[in-house]
Length: 310
Image (cartoon, rainbow, N blue to C red; front, side):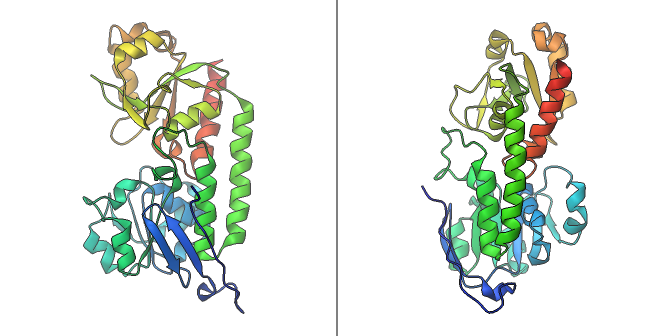
């Protein structure tokens, strides 16, 4: 399924916002942009970082829902954008910013419990875009997405805002980093248990989540890759049976890597796993596991940590 169709208008002043005309198909429907948005609101860190990496902070009326600290190269730009809420802002709060574009990283942003369906915003004359990796229509939950959605999002946002040149440069840079990490193959066929959270039942990654793509890109084999879905409940019995070579700990506000490692080391059964006994743990921040602009940083960090385990 083709994600978007873009028509660029010919104009006397290509750099002006009014020069851009585009028809974009997001997960929740199609929207026609007569001009490039000037009051965008981003929801979720990966969406915010695409905007900042393309130098579009001056087109942002607000942002919300960061998972980790913003990277140093974007800190000044990020500081210039109003933060609307720690998590998802109320619909009424978003409306008060007079937005003309909403850009979300996860489908939960457009759930009825949060901001409501994309189509409802279209009815108000406000464009929307959900990152490609989070759209079930373009990336079904039972099909591994690969890294292509990262590049697709950059291209779409570049087209919407009329910064195709910047987008092309960022795509080339990002693709080169993704390719280099893949060729390094630091995982060398070793098996890995990806541990997000949970104690009685570990929350892990199935066939098709971003963290699964992360470990597989560097050559690791996800022990839960045969399970459908992006996120899955995985029995400890399965982990013990697989006895993975490496344990990948996701660092997150809701479950720190230190807490997860301490739990495994203190459990009499899990402590006997080879990876636990030998200390073969690697840690990746959650923001580097989603299919966004920090994904390449996650690949670099994972590769370096795996090399250090050899």
